[in-house]
Image (cartoon, rainbow, N blue to C red; front, side, top):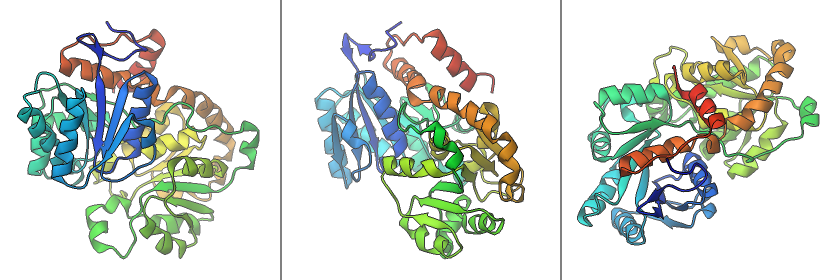
Amino acid sequence: MQDYDKPLLKNGEPLKLLECASHHCIRCVKKGRAFKKLGYEVHGMGNRISYGVNDYNTYVVWQNERQFKSSIKAYIDIGVNAITWNNEPDLPAIWIRQVITDMNKQDDVKLVSDLHDLDSVRRKLIPLEERKMINISDGLIYVSLPIEKETNELHKIIIPTTTIYSYCNEGIIEYDEDKIGERSAIVYEGGANPPEDTELNKVFSYRSLYDIMRKLVAMGNEVHMFCGNVTAVEPYSTIGVVCYPPALYDEMMKGMLKFKYGVLVFNNHDGKKDQVNLTLTNKMHEYLQCGIPSLACWCPESEKYVKKHNIGFTFNHIDEIGDCSQLNDHYIDVMNNIKTKRKELVMENFISRVENLYAEVHGIEGKSVPKRIQKLQDLEYKGE
């Protein structure tokens, strides 16, 4: 087995990694930062400059197929041999495969797709491009175990797969425990549909949060939102929510330190939206690192995780949240548990799962994992 704290070697040389995406989201950066800490050469691609990409060795902005394929070829020419496409969309994965094939590099360069969002889960249909992306990948990464299970069965997957949750990086934010008693109010971070956008609310109905936020305010809560989209700021401000426009990740994390609870609620009261039922979110881990207990409702897989690690509170209906005063008796216990869990549940403790997927698709020896890390990984991913 290869050394745990060093990059994987192929033919005596470290693998060179490329995290490739359209929107180069924070999940890409979280993985990239963990790889960099291990000593990998890590490159990135996206259709705009994103937070955190300055950590990479290089980062390329692409706008069309020609630029994309030229950049992929250039990276392969300098020795990149582990390319991860972070969907969606799905089509660029097919472009990557075309470049690898045209260069006759199938044995040297492997394509792994990290499946952030799947229409087969979200919309109950399988677009042709999703099917092609999966068929031409050498390996697949999932964001949750239920999505891995369902997708592997749906697509009859026979290639190597793994799951890694969207953990934050170790040390991304720290807070003064002596000031926890000063915290107040509840906060939501992430995307929220403007109520007037009928089409958006139809396709991404689980992010239609207008009535949910209005209800939280009506129950006596001071509600704040770090909006992932600027279009949410004005309409949600009209219902008594204090809204902040999209901010850089580190600024958002610092800004959340003053809040007592984090909203982990989606528009899924009927339990029919598998994008929510089956997945885990970035925001849950952001709350954890900020020392904020999650208020989880109408998101079964997230509720299960919150209960498992005792990092928040779960509810069958939003009405049960009330004004949060009933949570005070258990708040200190949860906060004490968060103090431990935020040190354990970090990307660096689980990134070897992705490395061992890379090893498998490259046909090289995988990594040995220290007993402490293996115990954490078993607790997270086995027996579920």
